[in-house]
Image (cartoon, rainbow, N blue to C red; front, side):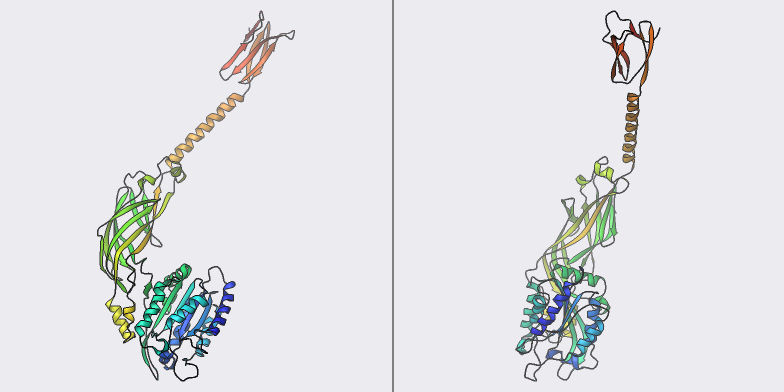
Length: 495
């Protein structure tokens, strides 16, 4: 495996300078004896297919490793690195050039064609090429797994699938069965299998985004068969009809978001929703399962009443109607005069949440059509039996995001704003009245004087000899004399 290790070391250096969103991808191409017709048939589209797959899957800046694999023997490493680059405009020429030089491998010191070990190649890609870090691995094979020319193909296939299902590194696994009839000097083949493995959660997300963007679909038009996971996102809810209750209306937003618009005066917001329940795990039929649902909003879990508590014979691509009644968390809807409502006046107060669907006692069956297709592409290969899901997978979960929005009118905010303005105006008037000096006539003896006084003040009054004969106290409500000296002739007003 030294040649592969050297190539991978170069890939590690490439990853160092990759952008934050770059995801490393490893492409494993089988070149054992079983693949002889794909290399020798002049009509074979095998190498052009691999070239276009690499170009479609890799985004600019993604680290790309291309390697050939068969079975490692002393003096014959496997996988063997062919190319280690960053994806750039010249990627097609680079991949095509590397594949042009690739031939069917033979055992060291022998004319015998090399054997195949799928599990060995996948393990090396996970542990060596990606060094256990997130990424995407592509494996292109005729699906014959026979190390040391072992004819117990079913046993070897099961070892390979145990690595997929029980290996903790692989979060997502897909298989694309492709028709490609070829005839070689030794063997004949009808088709290829292209596997895609999302390693780690980041690798699985990147694989999902790639498929959703349609990049791979430009090269491979066949739908992928899901190998893993089989315990989540096995079904999907699509609203088909909503009977709104007073004060509640439902709609679907972009990205599959269910949106509920609620009037804050609604006392018991609820709705009867008719769904389409869709099976999303091609090529499996959900033969049977019990189904339940709940909503999680504002930390409150509310059961959703379903029209049926069971699923029977739900095939991929055949939606089944499902009725439900859903209640919304009234206790968490802010009151009309609350701070939260006033802050949201004229817009919407949003409660994000989700609807969770749970399938228990889940029993999956491989569809008959898929079995027949596998028999056509890989005659005599017991592969379809290997697609049977592990016995331990008996339940699954699905989730639909939901957003509850309360719309509050502007009137309360306008009323509060008007009242606040009036209060401020009254306070300003009072402040002005309090601070404005007032004129007051005071008679001392036979002399009339004009004094200026502000509310809240007290000032002394003196006679002509300079003696204090009284004090003038002023309030908001008027003036009065205090501390009158005995015998003093002092009074308010003039003669």
